Image 1 (cartoon, rainbow, N blue to C red):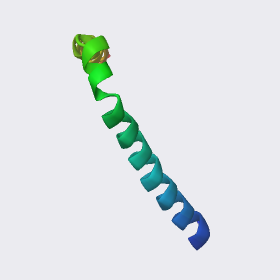
Image 2 (cartoon, rainbow, N blue to C red; image 1 turned 30 degrees about the vertical axis):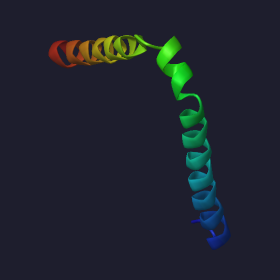
Image 3 (cartoon, rainbow, N blue to C red; image 1 turned 120 degrees about the vertical axis):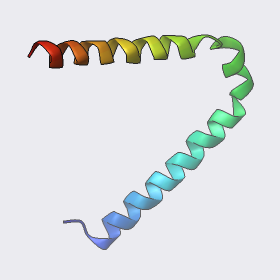
Length: 61
């Protein structure tokens, strides 16, 4: 399906990408705490809304 070169490239790309994202997050963690203080509640509400829609679908179908 994939050649060895493609697999190696994909794995290296994923590892390097994860390291860069982690480093960028650690660099900006103070700003995230300051400006995005209540955003976790928005995420929880969004997930709850999606779960509610899925529950309604399974109950009525």
